[in-house]
Image (tube, rainbow, N blue to C red; front, side, top):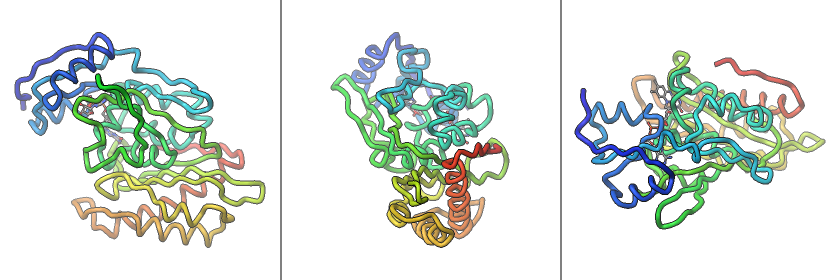
Amino acid sequence: MYPAPFEYTRAESLAHALELMGEHGDEARPLAGGMSLLPLLKLRLARPAWLVDIGRLDELAGIADEDGALGIGALTRHVTVAGDAAIRDRYPMVHDAISTVGDPQVRNQGTTGGSMSHADPAGNWGPVSLAIGARMLCRSVRGERWVEAADFYVDAYTTALAPDEILARVELPAFGGSGAYLALRRRVGDFALASVAVQLTLDAQGACGAVGIGLGAVGLTPIKAAEAETAMRGNAITDELVGEAAELVYGAADPLEDVHGPVEYRRSAVRALFKRAVGIAVRRHGGEAVEMIA
Ligand code: FAD
């Protein structure tokens, strides 16, 4: 199908893009990599009157150390995130997740900000940003504000971004420790049927310090498994503790039944993935290089 008619402007700078978004508000949509928006236009599931192309704004791309935290520009392509040495070393969970987004074409074209703004419940960035406690810099002609990941994902395909706002940058805090992201997919390149992101720190005695757990594809939004985090925090990582936390993860999952399987299937999958992800995070914390297979 062909998209409904729309006006198109290639923004020359972020300031220009914000001006256009401010002017056209509800009627406008930013166009980044186009991996999700173009199919929506062609299917006429989205009919914006104006496309503001931000796809060539270099000022929105790149990864930078920001006093220990890591800033990722919204236009940073998945391929860049997946290949970044600092991300691989400091946030292996993010590397696991982003190096397995879709296929090489999607990773070459798709962007961090586009992925987060699209807010697909099965998207890889959702659980990761919740587990790590990322925050998003939202900008408009009215100014800028930071939104915590926990407040960013409002509903399926819906975020806290106002109609005139552009997601400019994402900040990953200096969480420390290690982590892992695991997903269940029918085939390589498919969206996840269930996914788990875990980031944790351990003290010298093996007790869990800080911990973040995000679940994907088991609800209308990515889910922060807060009760499981509380159960783990301050306690030694034993099979018993992980089993107990896994039951809380199972309880936090709230999937819908679909063609891929019943509710019970996804909840059981996320429980099993969680146990494996904790095991990998602990091994990585101990210095073991555990590579994921896409
Ligand atoms: P676009 O398609 O350009 O935009 C998507 C939406 O976000 C639009 O509504 C647009 O207006 C808005 N937007 C874009 N940038 C901004 C911004 N900076 N601020 C505000 N709004 C913005 N994703 C996964 O996570 N896991 C997968 O396994 C996966 N598999 C895929 C397989 C295929 C075949 C395809 C086509 C996509 C897949 N994706 C997957 C989605 C992919 O990650 C896309 O890159 C992403 O969803 C959108 O990024 P984009 O830059 O292409 O955004």
